[in-house]
Image (cartoon, helix red, strand yellow):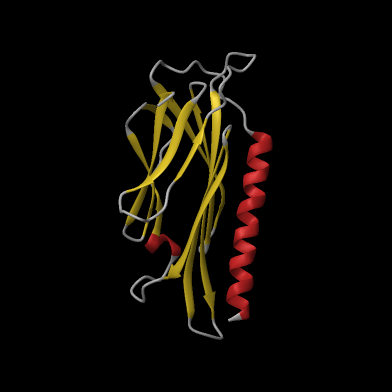
Length: 180
């Protein structure tokens, strides 16, 4: 059991490091953002058979709200606001989202679990949501229980964009304009 706990702590630490690096390195695409829309870029930081770490940058209007919502009640979610003031170069405001999925297998025991974490970093602060649970015996790999759905592109404000499906729960990104 100690090995499983150590693996979970290591996965959480990795996600927080990636989130800190992402905060320091965020850059706008430099492209003008169409009115009433937001732009998403997705960077896969790490992907192997047992671990996925992705960084999502959301460019939006200053002061916009960014939420991650679940399609199931009581399954968690996050919210943050984009910076209120325009950037000196006129580029859109940026909110960062880091996603971690880790398949924890401990051969010495009966541990076969999924550690899932989302970290949202905006002007109004940071928010983290995590969940750990067993992987059903019928599922063998991380890809069987976690799939990234968000594609890079421009989306309309007020519409949800599917982010990730974890088991039977889908999380989506929803961006509202300033003061919404």
